[in-house]
Amino acid sequence: MRLTFIAALCCATPLMAADITVEDAYARASRPGAPTGAMFMTIHNASETDDRLTEARSPVAQIVELHTHIEDGGVMRMRPIEGGLAIPASGSHELARGGDHVMLMGLTETLEEGTTVPLILVFENAGEISVAVTVDNTRQQGHTGMGHGEGAGN
Image (cartoon, rainbow, N blue to C red; front, side, top):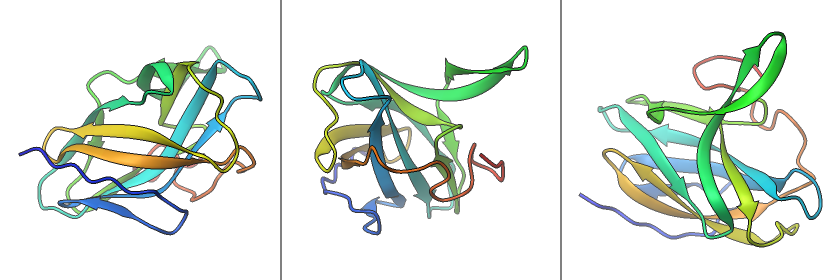
């Protein structure tokens, strides 16, 4: 079944489609005029079935990928996530700075403070969810605390 729900998000307003809830979605550019940016949020799954975020799309970037940080020889490097992100039944997964995130490459427009940009999240079970993500380039590290998802810190 394909579910679509469109809403503008503010920091405290969750987006829901079936049993998936997206909270605290925001985007940042790496610097003013940068060719890259990233999006962060917390995804909750209230169902009794695991789900998986398999893809993200946005018209504000030529390439949109699910990314994580991997330690490589003592240096943290970003890498695409193969196979998507597990969203456990009755659980959540945080996309946060320094951890898993939606990577925007080849930005087609400037991520201007206070504006919203569209994002489509594609889940194995919940289908597509459309989210209007607020640009907040002033947000500091560690907005909600979980990091890489299941209990890891930032």
